[in-house]
Length: 452
Image (cartoon, rainbow, N blue to C red):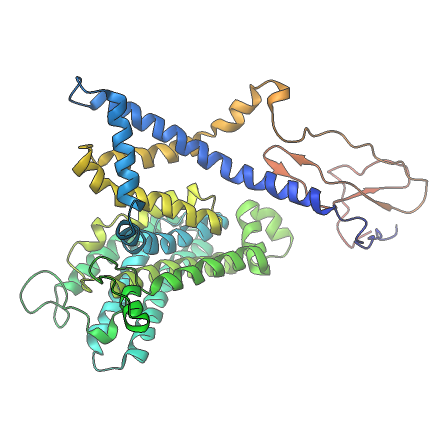
């Protein structure tokens, strides 16, 4: 039996540009459709909660719902100051922590340890900043950032090692390590030489040479503007966040390692058959995952006014757990994580104004966040589509392609067109091999690539 011949990929065999554009638009609509519908359903359910719980029944209830959501939006992105607060306090740490969760999801791992990895990153960076205050800023700042990133990677590496070589489930190990780090961080905060000399349960303030400058301060210095550094607190770490998003996209979409981790996450048996080192891949994924979260902890400490850590800070911080929601809502894609971080971060940031002006309990934001995850997990869209009339269903209908019968002789390869099936897509230019009898080999065939 001869080896199947591979036909060279010529420009005539490639799909035309218009077809590729339609395929890209269809994939984009498929990836964004479910999160958007989940958000719409969540807001509708949130409006029902407002209608039921609103105490003053004499006021138009629909006006109350409108006021609640408009003030929520205004408190998030209604003014430049609100935008700055949302980006600085929510978007920057939430995006990095969400990348940590997302890359683990891609490899089939459920990293609940982003909260602990963020905590150890901030704690280690704080320890270095307070210990080496005499260092110049050009040396101290990069050292703190790299140390925080490395600390988060080390914590993630422990989880990856236990998962790959000992079989310990990552959910259990990450939860346990979270609380070890939380209480360890509190112990360091309350211990000399890091504790504040005033006796309050917090560390000393980082020196100026350990702080990240705000964009407002740089603009005032370089362009002679007059921005208030008290209100505009976005710091230069937002550029590091953009770089981290690009790095995540490049790893997932443009590297061999990204392909391998996706295969490991989707089908470990196929990955093992293909020769992908599963244990090493799991360890590497968790190292990268922890590094993203550790970077978030270091930047959040060094960039935001206060520049100190208080006791119980990390055990009460919700960023690490909100990152799970962001990663799921963003479909673990780079662009999706950014959009989901802006959305959920905006909800968190705007809840204060919603409570102050519309007199709506800020816990409504938590209800909406939980409902978004519920509707994503419920997979309503495929169910709805299956019950729609055929003419209302979008997307191509899969059809059976006739297989050309080959003449008796050696195995021949036949190029087939690409068929997109709901919920899955076949690889472009897949090969269908037909033997000399004109029949397709069965799934139970013992044929393997490169073997007779």
